[in-house]
Amino acid sequence: MDQGQFDSALIQAAMARAEAVGWRGVAVAEAARAAGLPLDEARMRFPVPATVLLRLGMLADRAALVDDGSAGSIRERLFDLLMRRIDVLQQYRGGVRAVLRALPLDPLLALVLGNATAVSMDWVAQAAGVDTTGLMGRVRAGGLVAVWLQTVRAWDGDDSADLSTTMAALDKALDRAERLGRMLSREPAGEDVVDVTPADVPEPDPGVVDPMM
Image 1 (spheres, rainbow, N blue to C red):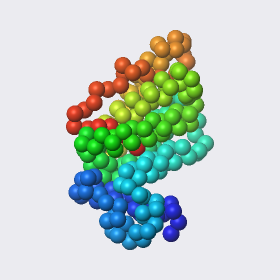
Image 2: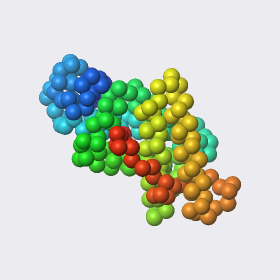
Image 3: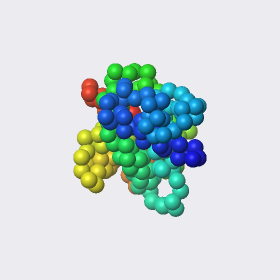
Image 4: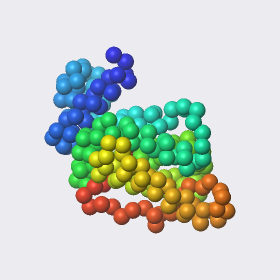
């Protein structure tokens, strides 16, 4: 079994456990046993449970960033890239939702995943053709984090088979970001700019601390 297969099997077992008993009940050793994986390798590749979530986030990034030759505007590319990440989370839906419920009680994990999300969104922005350098670049990257959080929040409550509610929320968030980006950069209405300001970051839901991943 190569490392990719090993990681996928352990992540699957850990997220299934999270769905069954909640994230705080997840132990890497138990997930490894459930997946029939050697504990020594699990210890090396997943030293703490949070590693499961970080690697899941990297799997989502990999799915988003693969070059399939698709074109389109920056906005269209962002929509596609972010929905690819959602498609990966959907494969572990029950476990991911359990993590969302646990985050308000685990500020350290929320901080770790928040930092990972910022890195992921920077990669997504660059892949879509967004300049993330300099002060305005930082604002653009931060704005994409806000778009992602709104999308995950919608996905958390979306029980539709086609994720139509999630896609509608993402579409709306990108529309808002595009409008604010034009205002911020003072570009003509015909320009393709995606940006948001800190004021556009949604108020946190007391029952959910957005990640991730």
